[in-house]
Length: 63
Image 1 (cartoon, rainbow, N blue to C red):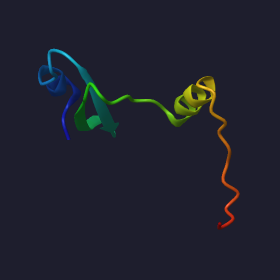
Image 2 (cartoon, helix red, strand yellow):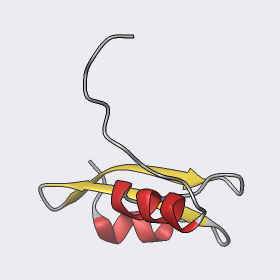
Image 3 (spheres, one colour):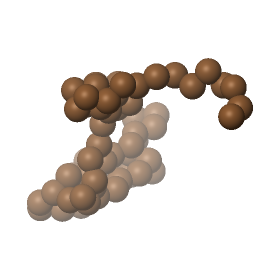
């Protein structure tokens, strides 16, 4: 685990970073690459709808 105060000193000068915390401490840090996008599932589905896609739930039937 990494303490929050220590992590700030090790962040890159430029770019985006994904930080995961557990029990008040940082458990992982990952630099997000320029070709990556971070979004919640809800945001991803909304973007798909705005782009004209129809999002449907699979009924579980095998094809």
